[in-house]
Length: 66
Image (tube, rainbow, N blue to C red; front, top):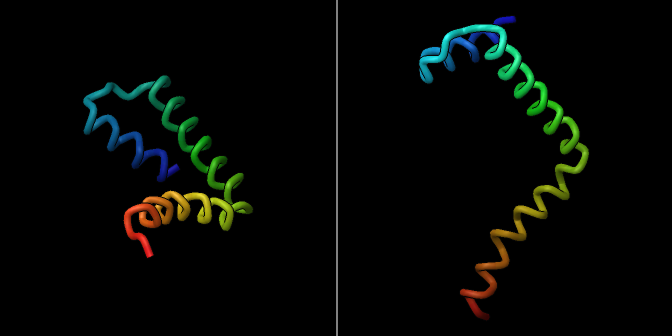
């Protein structure tokens, strides 16, 4: 698959790791885990935005008083 090939070639080039079965297993498993995480959190995207927005809003409410 082109996506895996691009990822594996860039990792081999950047980290100077020899290509092999272990690298392919790790890269493809990480890709599947990342897409699974995105797929699971997508229905709760509004809640996720509210959660991270609270982190940005809470410090400003303490520093900037009315």
